[in-house]
Length: 347
Image 1: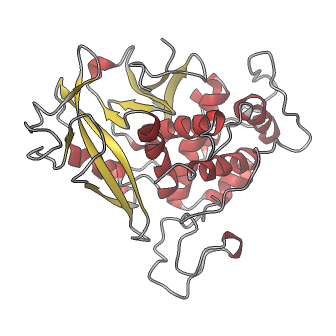
Image 2: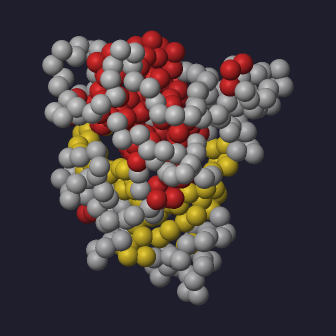
Image 3: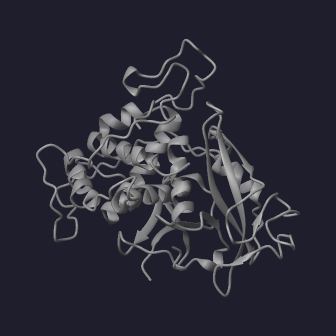
């Protein structure tokens, strides 16, 4: 079956991924303008205000209830909106890659800032068994344990589900809920607390992808390596992120696929889909910027976008978004609008 695949092999911090089609379905058939100082705590300083064009009150980060522009994302000046009939041609695109410059350093996951605090919720609307604590002593079923409170993904894999709330570090009133699933059969050494400690390092602007895959699928699923074909590390789309790794660049890349597909497919009536966002809008952005994201981004336009999503998040973390915008202005403009579109999903 078609799927978006992300391989462990990397070039620098680039995530090696492969996809046969931008309309990939999951393996199991499951159905902002941003401040470059996003990692800086301004919520407690009444004299610190966000940029004047955000409309946010002093002390409130600009990712809190941002305004989403109406209408489709515009193409680069001078380019069209009609899809092209052929595969994207990289001939004529300069060989310079953004990944050679961004991020400026490769961080271990513990060096990433903690953007939120995650907790297991003690309730769920799911008909599937959901654990209400790490040990699964309580759940929404009669018999609770990590062994018995599981659901079958397929005939070889079963998972334990948790309903999670993430609360923003810089603005405690900002919360978002999503589902996390941990493989119970075959078992993983990774536990729910470990998984949440990594997810807490994802920038707030990207959290909405976790909500998207919960709204349209099962949420993020941490699976045993036996689930993945050909050495893949993760698969990602609008209704799933299936991963065997907690490597943050991989997760950021997969969230790029999730949020791109959310813009492309849409969420009626909240968000009208934009079928041409990859072809030709993003293609023309690549041509306009005249550079490449990474070696793996050269695969096609949707992997180029997912790699840009990863790079953008890492630049947000280290405070180099201005430099990235200067290096790739059209990709930057389009991607920030895609992030804004993500905020239209229910929290």
